[in-house]
Image (cartoon, rainbow, N blue to C red; front, side):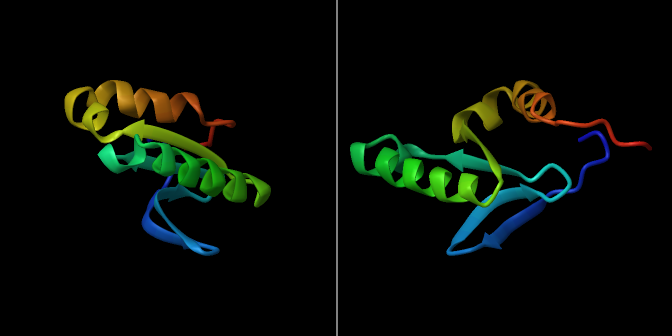
Length: 87
């Protein structure tokens, strides 16, 4: 991931996010079927809004995308990086 480090199942406030990259202040969430209901979408919107108020950006991906199009999933994350790190 272009030298970035990610933490898995990282606690931020009242939430535990799937992945967090401190250098980018980027949260990556993987959403399964429970997220695609009216209540799931409302909960996700509230969660994203709360994380945004902390200065974090949130990317959401469907679980199936990770399994079926891993390269596209990873490219989507890298495209969200703000700065190039020196390696």
